[in-house]
Image (cartoon, rainbow, N blue to C red; front, side, top):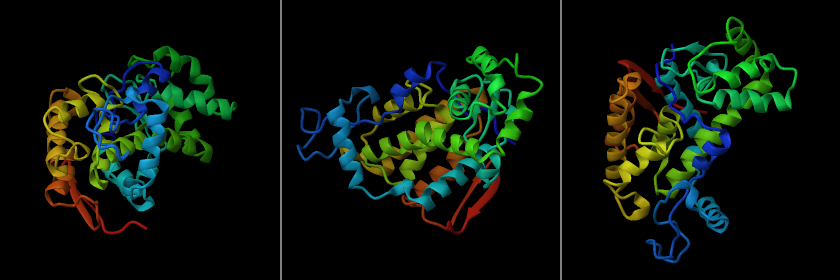
Length: 303
């Protein structure tokens, strides 16, 4: 069963939310802690980067190890997230998942918990319909636009959930879910983690935070939480120690979760991510064992 409170996305047009999906760093060598080498040495707000700075960031990122972007590590990341969101390691079984979990976000659906109340689900269906006009969800677009930002089911019941499950059997719709997961959650989280000087575990911690808290700059959103952590400790890119920074980032996340009634259970941090950190497993090497909600999960190897 999907756990409550998967996403707390900003209710805003996708173009606005997209501003937060660019990962950035402070200009190296320009009076912001850079050493003139072109290597990022700090972090700034996502909308502070110029095109030339983003181009330099891209060049720097290409010089780094793949980290969580390696196919086996990315697969492992999806399994760990699924253990917290679905109490299962089988994340591919979640394409057809759809349920109102009572978190005030309407229906939660799919592999990353797209929500009818947080714009990302309606945006997914909009894009998918442009490429596949005759899909089984297209007829619900007017209702999806109308309920965006609310927990309402008006215009969706009783057929929407059945339509979602049926469409999830279509390979193109599964691919659309994969693409939006990567575009708005996985890719920006991993990119920013790398620019912050974080290894594979840190990249996963950012990704899980992006999934759970959403790509918002408010105090409870991913970027707001990151800024709060940076106020207490330097990132490795700024000369800080990786374990120290990640420990504080997890503290900030835990506090934010406990302050929200939808996120009271913090075992995805306490007996999973923090355990990996304290074990010194910064590369997420397998075999890997952890607990979420008291249930033990283990991955011996990822092909």
